Image (cartoon, rainbow over all chains, first blue to last red; front, side, top):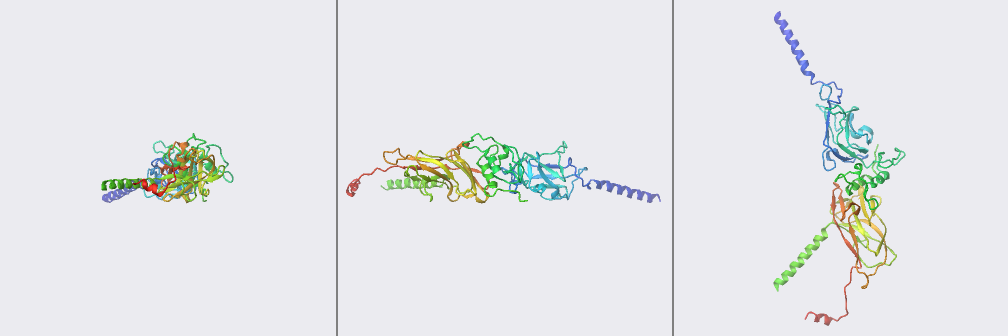
Length: 239
Length: 192
């Protein structure tokens, strides 16, 4: 009789141990932005509303800026199976106008068994921004150390920087940013103001017009890269 | 005698090799005809317009941009210029002070052949090719001066890398060869 009780107790204890042990392999499915992590090598990419800019895996200067994201819950457990469409990129300073909304910058694949996914493609966008946020189900991924939004130092610069007016946004003056998802004469006129010419040899440098190496100066390579997206039929968001 | 002959042959061969090497250098040159064969010209009638043809030679890459400047002599007054296909190429600046030309995604230029990049329109000015005139007047291709370049540069399509070339010189009134009347007997007498 006593022996039977010990057996029962042992079984119960074993059950408890098994349940406790399995806690760390189960996730709540709720994203914890402070426990999730995102990382990438910094760099510069040209982004275009048509989607034919520089891929993150081959940024300006042949730098690989592919982003790796690990999505975790509050127990620090990776969350698998989050659809790629639930994860996207936005500009850290709200400087990018995504073509088609968040689908213009989705992750490559759903998260794997460890909650990991990558972003290999540049945002399909106009505008200009100094960095990128990774967003999961509407939540910006934070720096685990500070629990503040983590801005990846991947500068995104588009030849679509200005608006040509209706039916797009109102045009804006000088170097104010007002992309309209198409590369037009408004953008060319703006670019020229930063390109040294005989009439304007001291054209001021603007990083948003700097698309190619050597960075930190506006050169023929920048003009050539701009023109690829402008001359002929200017590139525009197909949606 | 044989040694002398061999020496002459060696010098001639070196000259031919040097000539072919020069011909392979990527360059930008002004031509006076649409077939791109004439780099020298006599004076045109003063006050009459003419079209020049700026051509990239020997770049051996797909070209998506080029920049240069042109120094025009007094015999040519620059009026303006046009691009061979304004629908697929755009420019910034002008050739006297520096011009940059870039090409649409569809239409990068095949730099493995000669590429015409610009057609300056000029007016013939004061020009005198006679022996008593001022002599040859050069039309010199230089660098994109607003960026301090001293020679033409072009951008390769695949990676947007910039390469330098050579700015060539074309001539108006290329020079004179003095002539005098003579007889065949007098010519032969020079070699006796």
